Image: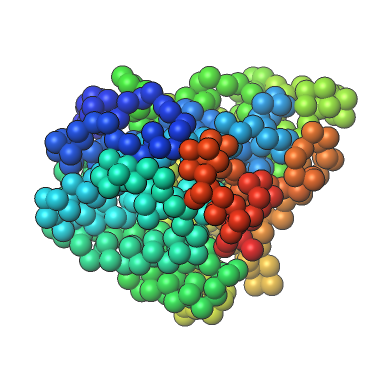
Amino acid sequence: MMKKIISTISIVCLLLTSCEFDKGFEELNVNPTKASQLDVNNKFASVFLRTSGGRYENWRASLIYSSTIVQHISSTATYWTGNFYTRNNDYATSLFDRAYPEQVKEIEDILYQLNEEGNTGTAMGVARIWRVFIYHRLTDLYGDIPYSEAGKGFIENILKPKYDAQKDIYADMLAELEAATGQLGADTLGNSDLIFQGDVGKWKKFANSMMLRLAMRLTKVDPAAAQSWATKAINAGTMTSNDDICFIQHTAGPEGVNKNGHGEVFTADGNPRLAKTFVNFLKDDPRLPILGARRSDGSTNPEDLIGLPSGLTTGALEEKYGTVSDDYAEPNRKVITGEDTPMVFQTFAEVAFLKAEAAVRGWITGNAKEHYEEGVKAAMQMLSMLYPNAAAISDEEVAAYLSAKPYQEDKAMQMIHEQYWAATFLNEYEAFANWRRTGYPELEPFGGEGVYNGNVTQGTIPRRMIYPNSESSTNPESFAEAIARQGPNEFTTRVWWDK
């Protein structure tokens, strides 16, 4: 049934938006179609798939940059620029470039149509929730972004949208999530709900779970607001098990839009390996042989799985270690790299770890250790649920792991967020954001392998992605205001919540 649904969605997507791509921001905001004449449910199916993303942005912003920066993945190929802290404008801007003409334009069009039709029920609630998800990934990656005026070229003739301050964006996103849940009712999106298949209860849990995620982003800059929104989210009801995970199931075709964008990358590119930092953390962890396999022979024997050092070219690797990249583990191609694997947006494990943090901070009365252990168990056992070829991790294996590596109150934040980092493998935008907020795991630049001489960050780990250069000419005044407020358009400029 799912294959039938997703196969037909490709036709809808072609009607909604051209696959051709223009970097000019004025063009990004102009909708040349008459999409409002289409049934709004078909538009939902399209925007869910577009948010999952294609090979273009998942290759560049998600894997080449985000995954290597947080040392989940490494590569000796120098075009994997995030691994070397070098600058490739097209790669670093790729989510911005693709999200605005596709995800943003489509969700704003959906909201416009729902308003025109007087629809204030479940469809409107879901649209507002998904709008927050789209923008929160953008603002977390880039900082100040077009928000309140974005995607409204066709609707309101706004061709040069202002860049809203991230502080204001966050305040609005949190308020939107609270309001949106109140609009969820008995009606559903039917087959167009590719996320929760019409389960409104799960949409409410997801909205509250995302509220918790966003609340915790504020811990550096506004602890009082972080506490207020976090407790509100938890009291309203967040995810309660792996059955509530927010993900979209993909198929291997017939159209590219149906495929998992990460899977398309792994099909096209044999260079990525599991990073040394990540594999070392996973030693004696039952997840390691599920997530990794040795490139040279496909072995999943944990003793054979070695992580590739970060920041080393092929020549530097051979000179320093006498090895080649095929000696190292790569993402397991028999389990997690398929074009038909799900794209995960938020998991119950993440929620459990955030609740553990809230308990450590004294914001809730729950037991931090219990939430932590619940998160570890969920993170391990969700793999066989998400990936049919993954071996199931038993309760006994989880218990043995927790016994061998028990929760320690004096290292609570470190342990919680190291596990969060492990649980967000292949959810790289979130892994990058949470590492910047918490500082865990305590990563060394280039994995401690020395400084790559061509880096553009003075040897420090990047803190954000950069805006497209085209913005300075297509939207110059708004762009200049954003730079003046936030700081130079560099990888080292921190976003508001990361100050």
